[in-house]
Image 1 (cartoon, protein in one colour):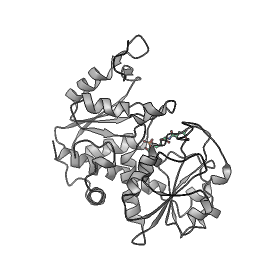
Image 2 (cartoon, rainbow, N blue to C red):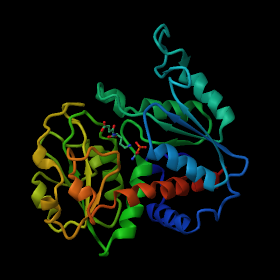
Image 3 (spheres, rainbow, N blue to C red):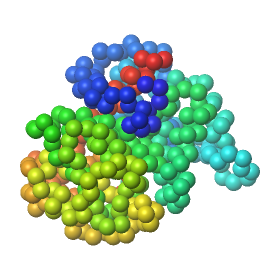
Image 4 (tube, protein in one colour):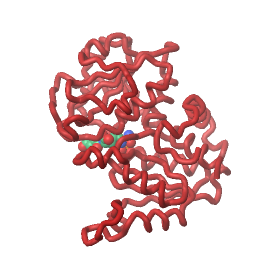
Amino acid sequence: MQHFLSVHDATNIDTLVNEGLQLKKSPFAHKHLGENKTIGLLFFNQSLRTRLSTQRAAQNLGMNTMVMTVGQDSWGLELEEGVIMDGGNAEHVKEAAAVMGKYCDILAVRAFAGLQDREKDYAELVMTQFKKYAGVPIVNLESATRHPLQSLADCITIEEYKTTARPKVVLTWAPHFKSLPQAVANSFCEWMTRRDVEFVVTHPEGYELNPDYLNNAKVVYNQDEAFAGADFIYAKNWSSYEQYGKVLTKDPSWMITQQKMDLTNKGKFMHCLPVRRNVKVTDEVIDGPQSIVVEQAGNRLWSAQAVLKQILETL
Ligand SMILES: NCCC[C@H](NC(=O)CCC(=O)O)C(=O)O
Ligand SMILES: NC(=O)OP(=O)(O)O
């Protein structure tokens, strides 16, 4: 694997999932693979899981790690081409990415959607610019439209917890008072529609995802109907794609409650975290026996390690 920006960079999802499961059993089996190699992690946004799991994954492979919060530890980065740089950003990504590419063998970048300008967000400027100018493999740590390391961890988790050959997996919108990106939901659709699962997406009207990412997934507007017989409930909030970045409703009836979980086939509750308790999901559900959110987050380590291993093998 050269870069890891989306599902399209994964030549075989099964291989990656199995690689992750294998690494979970023997984390240090490839501890020399990354010897004398360095990964740089760049954050334009906050993170707990991605920041720590990716560092740990790199360390398990023997790599050195450097972490930087862009604009806080570093200069603010200008991303647009041809602009007069008389604003707040002191450095252009052209130089910055190229320079970081001299210090690092792999660069991993997190840059969320701004949710103001749909065209700009969906053009994935940050990832595109880093890929163009860094001269080293780029890993997506959640971009404007995707979070593939999360989705791979989700695939690994479903593989571990499924009790039938072809489980029913439901992606459900859940309420939030803030405007959140579509990245996690988009990515989950991209990966799930390529897995051997019965995949259903449920959300209120107006929250339709970009069809390019939805990838013909079945959409059911009635949440109870979607939950019936589900083996996995994957909750996430996202803001509207059509009325870009808008919070159209905070309808609390979409919150995941035990009553709703009881409609499922003893379904497991998943969420990428961080999650707002008693806004998106009740304490009862997230603290209850059906919740696997901590195990899911734990698998972020094996997802990152599987991807870094495949990239290192090509260096
Ligand atoms: N990386 C996992 C999710 C990150 C981000 N969530 C957030 O920003 C939550 C913020 C809050 O709840 O205040 C998102 O939805 O894409
Ligand atoms: N799920 C996830 O990406 O978490 P962080 O935002 O904490 O990295």
